[in-house]
Image (tube, rainbow, N blue to C red; front, side, top):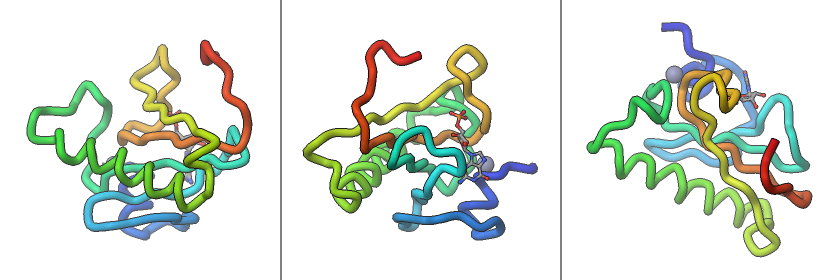
Length: 113
Ligand code: 5GP
Ligand code: ZN
């Protein structure tokens, strides 16, 4: 399987990692949409939210705990940040390995585009 985020998780392609542990890696997006744009991924390949199953519940929780940690590290926890996970075509998912976008450093609009 040729998955760019699996390669990031294994260190096979260069990335600017801001947090990692046994299950999760967080790294800066290559095409940032905000002053801070970090992607939080599980090391294990899961293509989309549609592919999540009951045993993945703790892992998904880990993504949020890692995002919380990254927000604190970046100093944006209090001012605020947005967490987004796009799923499939209509939401604009382009990499099919689940990832939580952490966007911060500017005011976010609602509804999102
Ligand atoms: P999606 O559109 O699937 O929600 O988000 C995919 C994100 O991955 C995009 O924001 C894109 O800029 C980012 N991205 C794609 N390839 C790479 C890569 O090789 N390295 C990094 N750091 N980000 C990537
Ligand atoms: Zn993958």
